[in-house]
Structure formats: structure tokens, C-alpha cells
Image (cartoon, rainbow, N blue to C red; front, side):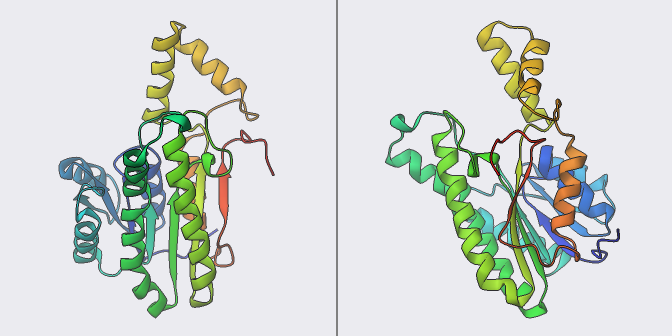
Length: 257
């Protein structure tokens, strides 16, 4: 299948590693002019050098004015954006009973505010051209909140609600808005989580990984390239009639329809 993305432009947030990097690679291989981003400009440029037609931009998205600076740098590098991929880490873990006003504010400042600024800054050009793709790399917690991640659950659900509302407002202008929800994907972050669990429990790492995989109907962790392929499809011309959707890429982990 030809995705019809050659010559399009894309900004991929937090794309120097993990799922963001896999998405950047998948889009670049489809001929998209990709802007790779991360807090380290040097690292962003290293990753961009590995991809055809990509440029690297360093920016702390959650810093004051970070989203605005990133947009300006992306436009300077590739022009108006056809594709915007939202991505980034969530707040520290913790139970709902321990949340406070400062924590809630942090969750919104991390997972909602900069994303809304990026969307607001890129949407007019998409609407004017009659074509655009906004994709959020989120979490299965949007559909099944995860224990001890109350602030992340709060922020990601808020962003998902905003994007769902937006999807209906811009569908007739040729702009789709979707979320892609990863389960356990074999990224450095997943490895860190398993290593932390092994250290906390005193159990061998391979035992921790085996127990985690046993909860996944597919019987394994997903590959980053599989996630990237799903992201690229949702950004494709063929996916023009898919919008307002949250698609799970989780090997069947979440036991809901």
C-alpha cells in the first residue's frame, strides 16, 4: 500500500527514542520531511541524520514558551506542517488519594497545555490546505486507567477528550485527529520499568519480563516498528475517513471492546 505521504511535512514530538523515534522512522521511510525533536539538540540531530529528509531540533516542550519555540523552529526547517504527532512523558506515579492542586496543575502543564498550543498553531494551515493529520501517542490508560498513575491518567484523559472534540470540528476540512494507544512495546522505557520492578521485588529480570508477557494475549512485547507502522497508517491518505478514534496497539492486553 502506498500511503501517499511523499513530500508531506511532520513534527514528531519526543522522537529521539522509543515510540516517537519509531514513528519518525516510519514516516520518513514514506517520504515525509520529518522534524525530530528532543530536549537535547545534539541527540535530535543524531537521530535525524539516520533518517532520509529529516532535521533535528532541540527543545524542552514543557518549558515556558517551549511549544511556541518548537513550532517556530519546525516551520523554519520544513515550512507549514501537514502532520503533527503529539508525544511526551507523563508525571510521576502516585495514588489518586495523594494528589494535590500542584500535582494536577503539573499534569495539565505536561500533558495538555503544550499539546493544545501545538495544535492551535498548526491547525490553521491544515484547514487552509484541506489536508492534515493530528495524532497523539497516548496510553491504554485512556481506556483503562492504570493503578498508581493517577496524574498521568488524569492528564492523558483530558487531552483525549479535547482531541475527540476537535476531531468532529475539523473533519469536514480534511483534517483527522486520532490517538494511538501503546501497550507494552519493547522500548528502552519498557526495559527500565522491568528493571525497576526486578530491583524492587528482588526477582530476576527474565522472570519479571515473563510474567509481564503472560498478561498479553499475543505473548510478547510489541516491536517499535509495529507501532510506527500503525502511526504511519493513521497519517496516510487512505486513513482519511478515520478520525476521532483511539486505536490500541497492545497485543490484546486491554480486556475491553
